[in-house]
Amino acid sequence: MGLPFKEDEDFRKHNQMASESAVEDLRQFIDDVEAYDASIADLQRDKKDCFTMIKAKGYNVKALRRLLADRKKNAGEEKEMREVIEQYKNLLL
Image (tube, rainbow, N blue to C red; front, top):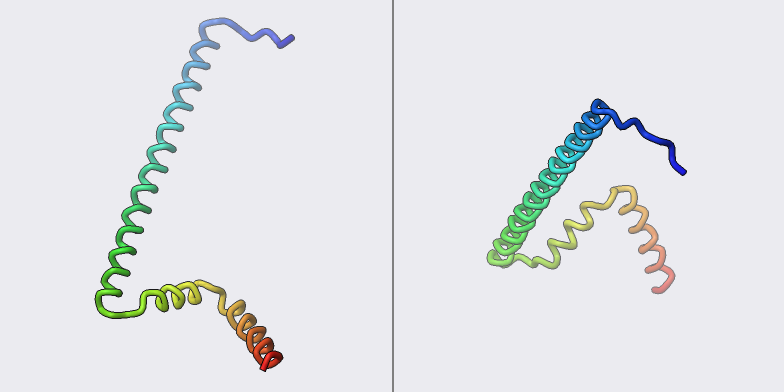
């Protein structure tokens, strides 16, 4: 059994204002997320166009994608990975 709540006019007004505020917050959050999604879609389209131009100029897109992925890695991680790969090469050769 729950506790009884106040049922006066001030309490109802307070609840109504709180609900309206929550609705406004939610609408704003939804608007923001939709705007971010639109921005992301625009950026993805721009990126695709850039790769189309790269390909049209005769560059190897696959190699450039690999280069971009490598550049994203932490320099320390990359150095460590190269050392491990070099050790594996030495063991196998």
